[in-house]
Length: 254
Image (tube, rainbow, N blue to C red):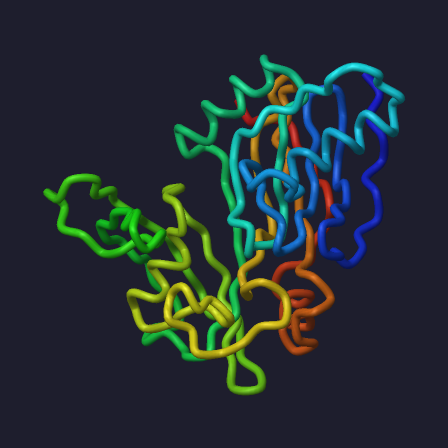
């Protein structure tokens, strides 16, 4: 099986995606902020639709293109997003995400520092469907789900702080809600009480995704740096702490 080389990274533009990696089973892209993964209102483009159109154009496919959604990013969030190119790959990848074997790493900029330099946050939360947000809840409340993540402060600049975040559960708006819960809302995230503007969506970016290839006995890590609109001090810190090699492959350990 031949694999195309990873395409060079470039700054995400509104409603324009960069392909990080592609083979017969996967299509991995860097999604810009402001673009829903799927399910937008009629007439509004989604990452899923754009990826299908791109594959149809590049491979001159006359019929419908299959892409399976196995994980999502909020429309305001940029970064690594994977689609499955076959139903078999979709089923296998969905199991990895469900069993929390796929590892995601995010970075965020906040206007206030957390109390600790690094910590694990665990709490119960539920969806407030009227306000379309995730809120704290008691463990016995209807709809409550346990949320868990680790964070580490990578540094600061211009009165702002850069955090690296590894979620252990995949709840909707989890990172946004948990950081707001400890008094550290993400820059530009007005839905979760940020009082500051951000030039491109919110300052939350899916930096990397590690998963087992659905067919090969290899572990893949896909990475994409944040958009060029992120401040220079944050970009420099990320280069020092989290150099983003677009594709890394390693054999599975027995």
